[in-house]
Structures are given as C-alpha cells and as structure tokens.
Image (cartoon, rainbow, N blue to C red; front, side, top):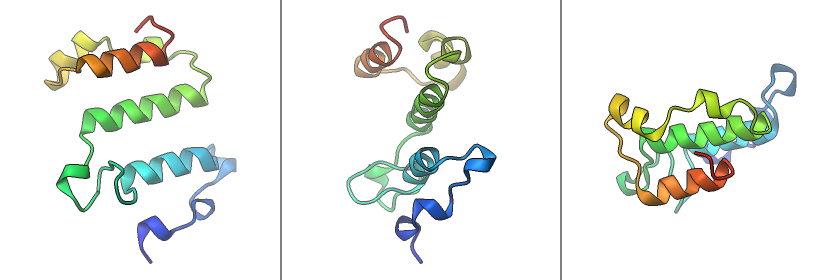
Amino acid sequence: EDWTDIDVTRIADAAAGWPEPAARAVKDLTKAGDGQKSLCHDSLRNRCTLPEALLALRALLSSAQGGAGMEEAAPAPADEARSTGYEPSSLSLQVRGMRTGGDA
C-alpha cells in the first residue's frame, strides 16, 4: 500500500490529540501527491526544504492553538537565519506577516 493511498482516518487519533486535520497535514508534508512539495517526494524538485517544513508545522501548530503563543515560540527571521543559515525570501516574510496579522 502506497503512503499517499492510506486514508487519513487510519492514522488520526483524536484521543491522543492527533485529529484528522493534523494527521492530514503531516501526512501531506511527509509525502504528498504529484505537484505538491513534501519531505519525501520522489522528485528532488518537489521536495520541500527543512525550513519550509518547519514553517508548515508552525502554521499547523498556530492554527491548532488559535494563534496563541506562537509569537513567543517562533524565532525572529534574523535569529532563524543565524541559527540555520536560512535567509527567508521577501515572499516568505510577506506570508509570515499575513499569517500573524502583520506583526511578524
């Protein structure tokens, strides 16, 4: 059975704090279908970078918490660049600004 064919209800567990939307997001981040970026995509061109995966996981956590507390947990873009060597693009900064209400 292929990972993309597994129904998300088989990996979700609401009692463990793992609802279907979270399971679907992590499943897609792990290996998505054609044309979507994921960590384990067969095509190098469609593999997401670790900073992209981190951004997706932060967005998932933020939506699960209703956005509360993420400002403290997420490092500032300059701090992130120093620790990982990742320089966010202007588009990444713009998306972050939209996601956090403009105070990123």
